[in-house]
Length: 74
View 1: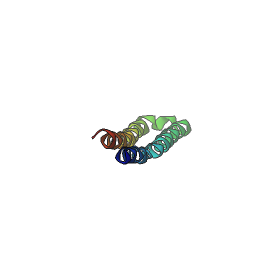
View 2: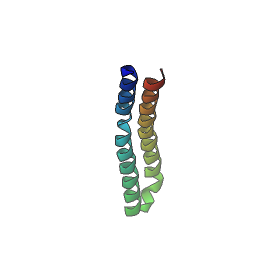
View 3: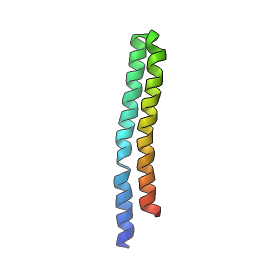
């Protein structure tokens, strides 16, 4: 019984990283929109970098979920 509760606590702690991921993705896209709004000519150079930043930040979320699921189900 106590081991099951410890699993839930561990999975909850692993998912705390998703708050940082949400903040990071919001920051990436707000900066991307702001930079394109200031200078639309720079969009072809800035947009791929923004998408790369999004993908790398989202990878952290996937790793956090993977760890949470491993704690719960393994």
